Each structure stands twice: as C-alpha cells, then as structure tokens.
Length: 240
Image 1 (cartoon, helix red, strand yellow):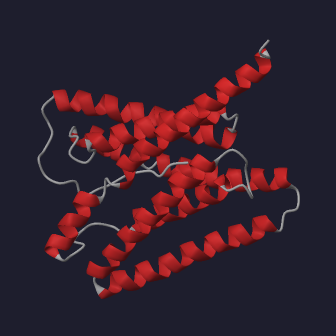
Image 2 (cartoon, one colour):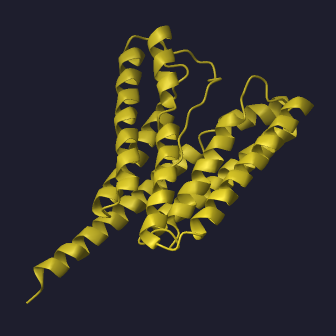
C-alpha cells in the first residue's frame, strides 16, 4: 500500500518543481524586456535620458537571490539559484552596453556604483559564511534577499502613480506587466509548495502589484490613451 504521507510529499515536490520551472520561463520575459531600449541606445550611440541605475539594482538583487538559492544557504532552491544567476548575467551585459555608450560622467558613476554592488555582495557572502548555525544563516540571507526583492517588485508603484496621473499606459508596457505577474505568481506558488516564507511573501506582493498593473493597463487602454512612443521609464523586477 502506498504511504499517503509519502504520496503527499511527492505531489508537493512535483508541484513546487513545476511552479519553479514556470517561474524560470516567465522570468525570461523580464530579462529580455530592456532589449528594445538597448537597440535604441546602440542605434543612436547614446544613452539619452535612460538611467543605468535599474540594471545595477537588479544585478544586486539577482546576486543576493542567487546566493540564497545555493545549497550553502537553503535547500531545495536550485530553481531560484538558476533563474537569478541567468538574470545576473543579463544585467551585467546591460550594464556593459550602457557604459559603452554613456558619456564620461555617467561611465565614472556607473563604474563606482558597480564596484559598490560587488562590494556589498562580497560582504554579505563573507559575513553569512561566518555564521555557523545553518538556520540562522538561512534566515539572515533570506531576510536580506527578501527585502531586496520586495523593494524591486515595489518599484512599479512609481509607474502606477504615473499612469494614474497621465491616464496613459505609455510608460507601462503590457508584456512587461504580464511577465511580472506570471513570474511572481509562479514563484509565489513555488514558495508555498516549498514552505519558504522568504520566497512566497515577496512574490505574493509582486503578484498583487502585477494584477494591479494589468487592471490599470486594460482600464486606460480601453480609454484609448496609449501613445506609440517608446517608454523612457522602465521598471522590471528580478525574480526570486
């Protein structure tokens, strides 16, 4: 006779894997979302009014979440590690491209901030490895990465405010909002099935914000207020 507890655990594990795999796939939509922006930057050989700060912050967030997903910090979170390591690679490419076409002042600023990001991450990694208690180490890194992810996922609040004020979805691309919602929802379920509060809480918040963005998009889209210009403001969150 099949042990019901074992069967339940197996089903939960499978559901967690499916949700995590889906989250990895949906996250690609977020990772590639800046490509049109960088096509424009490369074409015009100028960063224009675009800011490089979101890519630096996204890099730090991806690095922190990658570290949390490693076996040294938490167990059964390989899908978190893989998706965020890929995300970190995307952000590095964007940062290099941005610095290539930025003016001298922006290059110096970006280089300094990039050094700060690497330094902060190195301090967190080194500091956490000094903690002998694995549960305390996991909780500390989980809190840090969770707060980073929450602040990243909350960044669309600025865009939501702009959409309401301008009554236009020009600065809130549909596929970007959809990707954030799907990715957050998938990792919310992954965190639930994996019983990981540091994953399901921030992604639960991201899911709510994603729904809010989609509702606003369809409301103002129906009002016929969308412009055809490329957005100069970008907001995209990395995953956990």
